[in-house]
Length: 134
Image (tube, rainbow, N blue to C red; front, side):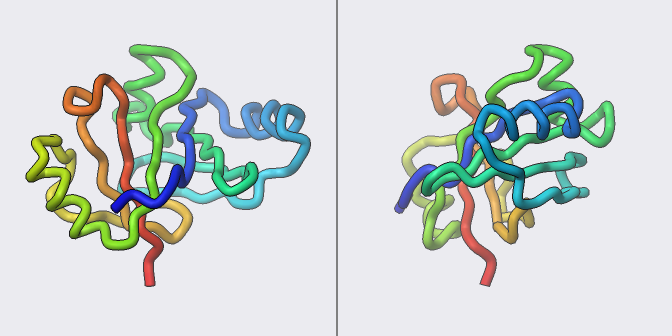
């Protein structure tokens, strides 16, 4: 079952410039920068209340984030929801008719297992499921 909004993912052209912009906007420093080689992105996280803002910069022109920026420009890329059991939630959502972009959870940023749902099955929104790795 979905517990809460874990983070909002924002695609950016330049992570350093975006970190400075969001530092000014949110009045705090990012707490983590991480490369996620499986997704070909560099990420930065800001804590905002009980949720997070994740900035994503493509580390390769062929990455999904780079392609997204080339097509749509910078902006909100995805909404991530926290779950207790990602395998169970993936099965539930698949049975409900949602299209999963990966058949098994994969390692994501910030010590998470993740799975993405295709925007065609979620009213145009890329949805990420996140479970804390044990």
